[in-house]
Length: 128
Figure (cartoon, rainbow, N blue to C red):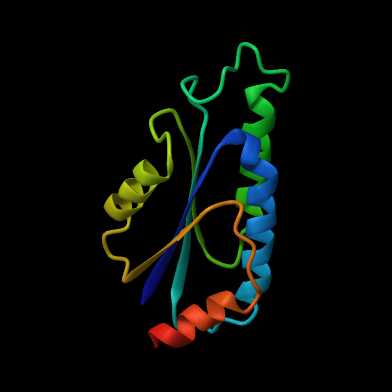
């Protein structure tokens, strides 16, 4: 069985994303190995969403931090990407559906969601 957790992130949400990924990692300690978990995370770097020319923080700061977050998510399959074309959560969900056609379930998360570390276990137990 394959479950995809899909998250869209704006650059200014990078710290919230880090907290969400940290909580997911804690939650992963309660899971068994019978399910393949996938983190499908996209951060937009589009000039349509962020005025990089006027930003006091360079785009590279966010891209570098995003890349580090990818390496810290070792409990599952990672599908992290930056994108100029995915501009919101709906286009992220559409991308997840296209890229993970073999998934049995999708969980759509926002970066500002805080949950108990047993939440993924509850999902797993409800599905099995």
